[in-house]
Amino acid sequence: MIPLAERMRPKTLTDYVGQEHIVGDGAVLQNAIKSGNIPSMILWGPPGTGKTTLARIIAEEVSTGFFTLSAINSGVKDVREVITKAKRSRFFDRPAPILFIDEIHRFNKAQQDSLLGAVEEGTITLIGATTENPSFEVIPALLSRAQVYVLKSLDEEQLLELVRQATQRDEYLSQRKWVMKETRALIDFANGDARKLYNILELLYSTFSQEKIVIENQLVVQTLQQNLVRYDKGGEMHYDIISAFIKSIRGSDPDAAVYWLARMLSGGEDPKFIARRLIILASEDIGLANPNALLLANTAFDAAHKIGMPEVRIVLSQVAIYLANSPKSNSAYRAIDMALAKVKETGNLPVPLHLRNAPTRLMKQLDYGKNYQYAHNFEEHFIDQQYLPDGLADNCFYAPADNPAERKALERLRRLWKGRYEK
Image 1 (cartoon, rainbow, N blue to C red):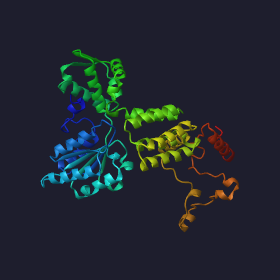
Image 2: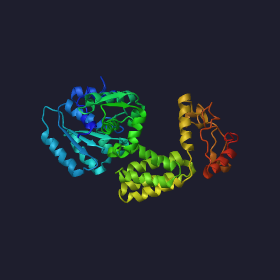
Image 3: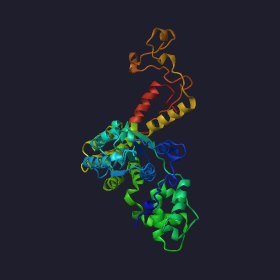
Image 4: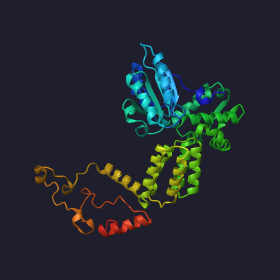
C-alpha cells in the first residue's frame, strides 16, 4: 500500500497547507509561479514541512520538466546525467526544467560544483531541500545563484486541517468514522511535521479494526509506545535522538552519550551534523569551565569534513566522552542572552567619550578618547575605569559558575572590580 503521506500529497497550491508567508496570496513564490519566472532556490526547513511537495507543485504549475536526485545516493556522474536529460527535454516555450535535490546539504563541494554551470546558463532551475542552514552547507558560488526560502513547522491549526483532509478524503481512512475527542497528544507527537502526523494516523488506522476510532490522548500515547519502531519510519526521531545526545552530554553521562551517538551513526546521520552540535554544546554547556572543549569539538568538525565514516566515528566518540566528562558551565550562554536583553531594553546607548576612537583633529577637539587610560601601563595590566555606557556602569552580565576555572576567575574579578562581583 502506498503510504498515507504519499496518497495525501497535494498536487496544487490550493491544496497545499502551510507556508503562507511564501506561497500565500501576494507572497514571493506565489508571484513567481504566476509570472512563470522561477528562480533557483533552496528550501530550508524542518522535516515534514512540504519542501518536496512544493517543488513538485511549482513544476506542475509552470508546466515544466521535473527531475529529482537524492543527495544521499547520488554522485557527480548522476548529476551530469540528469543535467543532460534536462537539456534534451527542454522546449523553447517553457521554463527551464526543474532539478530537485533532496537533502542538498549532504552534497560535497565537487557535487555542488557540478551544478554551477547548468544553473548559471539556465539549463535547469535548481530547487534544493535542506534541514540544515544553507549558509554552512551550500557553497557560496551556488548559494549566490539561488534564493533561500525558509519553511516553518506546521502549527496546530494546520495539522488539524491535514487530519480533517486525511480522514475525509483518503480512500482507506475515510472508510472509518473518526471522532476527534482529544487531539493534544496527536499534535504534540507530530511536532509540526506533516509526515509524522500521517504516520500516526496510518498507525492508528492499522492498529484498530473497529468502524469508529475515537481519538483520545491516552490512546495515541499507548499506541505509539507499543509501536515505536513502526512509528519511527525513515529515522523520523532525528531531532529527538540528537536532543537525547545533547542532554546526555550536558548531564555528564558518557555512556548515554555514546549510545545515542551510535544510534545516530547507525541510522545514517551525517557526521558533520553531529559535529556541529558538539561545537554548539561545547560553548553553551561547558564553556568557560573548560575552554579546551570548544577546541576539541571544532577539531571533530574538521575531521568529519576530512575523513568521514567509518573512521570519524572514533573521533566523535572521543569528543562526546570528553565533553560528557568535562565540568559544566552555561555562564557565557547566559551572559550574552542577558546582554542582548539589555540592548533590546535600552537601545543604542552612546559609547563613553573616553572609549571613542579619535583619528581626526575634530574628534580630539570634541574630547573623543580624552582621559582614556591604557591598561597595560598599570599593575596587573588593569585600571579601574568605565567601559559600559552611562547608566549601565554597574550592570553585571557575566556570573561565573561554580567550577574550578571560573572560581579562580571570580577571585580575580572581585579583586579588580571592587564590589561589582560580590553579589
